[in-house]
Length: 142
Image (cartoon, rainbow, N blue to C red):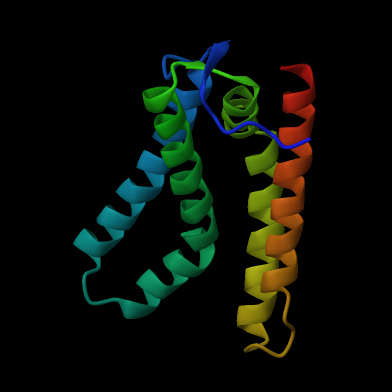
């Protein structure tokens, strides 16, 4: 049985939740830190590299989560079970709380070993598997 694509349904999806505000604020803080770094230390290449090394994975996940949630709510404010499961997977925070550190560690190990220890792709596979696991849970209760 295939999952139906996100579409109109019975689940109310809204951006007016503390979880969405926290997600947006967290992303905003990361961007503010980057802007402050660039403003106060414009010629410090190593500082920027350090920031991107430490925050790059988090920024990617936060941007993905924010775009997904905004797209779902904008497209289907009354979503079906699939839309609800995607919405909850991001806004519940469980996936981000576990996936970000897993991929950050994988990325850091690979970068510090100069590619000798290839952990980035396996850590991303784990993050995707975690996404689908949490998605399946929310889909089952939708």
